Structure formats: structure tokens, C-alpha cells
Image (cartoon, rainbow over all chains, first blue to last red; front, side, top):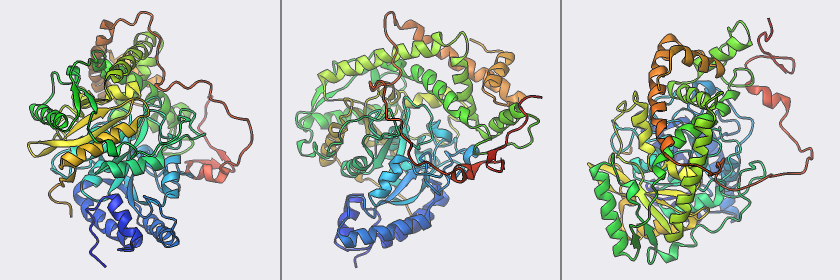
Length: 489
Length: 95
């Protein structure tokens, strides 16, 4: 038996498993050893699920032996701890849900389990997915494998860090304003925010219901396509999931970059963009053009920059309503010493939620309160219409829109923790895509001061295939996706 | 726009969120700064523009009203902090 190489991608592992080079059990055991070894420095997981992983690996080995294996059979995967998992505590990185054990799996995890994937653990995040650094976690911050003094981005920072460090080949995150794409960029891997409605939200802890989407992290397009193929599709339990067929997400791989029409809007290259990121973007645009892509710098999205403001009205408003369920009665943390129902509830919430969550609940409650609804929430929804129209118009001219994923590379821990506006600006380029509902992918495209830079490609509604085809083409002419962080245990 | 401590306390009451005096003063400054930033929306003309509630246009998603298996009371109550028999226990609502 050959040595088990944990730096392999999921499709390389899948081929090795099918040819009996090693077993799913051996892969799971080796993965757990590496993940455990990385945890003291990364803190990418809130819960490592050894027992579950080994049980699933044994089932995968049985399926492999019986010839019923799919692309994810026996493949180790990390699952953001916002996705409800039956019998495995699901914390949303909050003291509020520290001991919460869901009685059911969310739809996405049901599909993952049915596909034979092996869940290694529940990954760290900003509390209730609110943040861009994974520092707002009640379980301590996750660190960036490229530089342990820096953040991995967020909110899905644990899922990004463990894939970048080659702990697991693929993982799941959620993206409400950039929470998959921004950590993918800061950790130097691929992250895909799916079209709103493409993936079921049933059983996923809700943050902002009109924006939240589940999506994959991977190191190449082939793995992302396989994972998306498993989790995508209509779910009768999520009335906002799209009743549309799921394509083969590798269908555009053969096309490559040749003839791909790439729009580059000047609106996304303005003030606040770091020089190193800007330079990596320009180099990448040249590489795309040299390999057959048609660059169009005439598209404009002038209202998109207001997306950040629209987001910080809509998302906290929806969050303030969604998080009303945490009342200390049905499940979760409970204060216990309240003199009456109202004091019990207020103290439970005051003590159970962290600073950023409280800030957003306050902001949303204010925006929805009497006298302010029209000025804030309704106005934001109207601007949302304008932003959506701009994306639709631009994507009539081009196949994809290219922007930086984040205006900066990974920043130091605590650098932006006490300045909410500075933290929010990290998502300046990703947020408009959630507002419009379109799919967006972040791909590694270079380094600045030794830290990864990500480029974002935005596609038409439900055209994830176009984004993954472009990603695959990009991987044929660059090797950024093969770069690995220095120490990974 | 500067929010006063009383306004912060009023919003906290609406949100059922117990805040310390320190949190009240910090949130006052932070929320005021964020609300100032919201002013940029006033510069955008939305005359006659309809609002978008969510980005994928689905309307009136319906299903047949049939009984299907659901979780048992025991499973659902597994995480409840206070139970009595098969009921969730809450503190006094009316005094």
C-alpha cells in the first residue's frame, strides 16, 4: 500500500479509494490525526467528530466494496457549525447554543451523508455567521494557516482554514455577505457562493433569510463541482429553494477560457483597494486575456457600492427577527434567575449573545421600529432592485464579472475588532452579489506580501457551471491553487 | 445622527436584550456612526422603483395540507432548559 498523501484533492482520494490504494477508514484515521495536530495552532473546529467519522468511513468502505460509490464516498469533509447535525452539537459559535444538539440533520447534511461523505467535524465561525474574521466566536478565533498572527477571514473561517491547511480536501460554508468568498480569498482556496435558492437552507441556523446560502470550499473546480452537485437542488422543506434541475457542474470544463467574456467594472477598483491586491488583479486580467478571454472594461455597476449600506439595513433587520427565537424557553442557554418571563428572556439574551450579534440585533430592531421602516428597510429594498437590475444588464454584455474578492489580504488578529465599519468594509465587493442573488466564486490569483489574494467572478442566476468552467480554465493556465501554506502538521 | 442613551435603552427593550451601562454607551456611539453611513441611500433616486424582498422570483409556494410524520415531543424537548411533564416551563407572565 502506498503512503497516504493527505495533500490530495477529493477527486484524487476518490480515485485512490476506488482502486483500493487505501480504505476510507485509513483516510479518515489519518485525517483525524492531522486535524488534531493542527488544532492547537488553527482552532478551525468547534467539535471534531471522531466517532461519527469512523462510522461513516466504515459505511463508505462497504459501499466501495459493493460498487455503489459516488464522487464523495469516503471523502473527509468539514461542516460549518451553523448547519444542524443530528446528535452532534450545533453551536453557531454562540454561548447561546453551546450545548444545543439538534434532533435532525439539515437537508444539506442529509444529502452529504447519503453521498457517503465522512464528516470530520463542525468548523468554527463568527457567532451566528456575523463577521468577517472568525474572531467573533465564543470558542476563540481561528487562525490563518499562511500566518498564524492573522485572521482567516469569516464568517466561515474554520471551513476555509482547514481546507487551506490540507486538513480536509473540501468543506461547507454559508455566505450571507461574503462569508464563503472572503475567507476563501484570505486563505488562498476556492469558495463558491451559490445562487439564492440553489441550495436548501432547511435546518441551517438562520441569519438573514433573503441572503443566506450554503456553498462549497475546495482546492480546485472539480472538487467544488462534485460537492455542489450533491448539495444543490429543490427541497420541499425550503419554500425559497428553486424548483430547477441540477446540471452536471463540470459541463463547461472542456470550454476553458477561450472566448469567455469577462467584464471588469471600474466601480470595484476604487478607493480602499490595497495596491498589492490591485496589482494581482491586473496581472490576472492579463493572463485571462492571453488565454483567450475577452476583457470588457466598459461595464458599470454604479449603484453596487451602495450594496454595503443596503446590506447593513437588510441583514440586521432579518437577523433581529430570526434571532427572536432565542428566548431561553425551548432550547439553548437560559439565565434561570429571572423574576418574570420578560426579565428571564432579556437576561438570557443579554448574557447569551456576543457583542457583534447584539450590535446587529439593535441595528435591525431600530431599522424596523415604528417611524423608521420606510426610511431604512423599504428604501434599502428599493435600492436592492436597482442593484439587481445593474447586475442583470451587465451580465447581458458579458459572461462573468471580475472583481477583487476582498479589498485587502488577511489582516492581523484584533486589528479591526473594535471598529465595526472597518470590519464591514472587508465585504465591500462580495455583498452586492448577495443583494442581487447571483452566484459568485473566489479563486486564488496571486500573493501580496506572502499572503493570498482572491479574485471574484460573478455569474448569471443559476449559472454556477459557467463560474466553475472558468475556474477550471484558470487552473489549467496558473498554479496558484497548488500553493500550500508553510506549516500544516 | 446621534442616538441618546434613552433611545438605546428603548431599542434594547423592544429587542428583549439586557444591556449594561457600558454596553449602552458603546452601542450609542457605534450605532450612531453606522446610521450616519446609511445617509448615502438618500442620494439614490428610487422614485417608482418597486422593492425586492428576495432575489429569485417565486410566488405563493403551496403544498397539500397532509399530515406527515414529525419529531416526537421527547426529541423536541431534549434541549429545553425547564420541563414539567410534557410541557415547557416559563416564568410568570402576568404579575
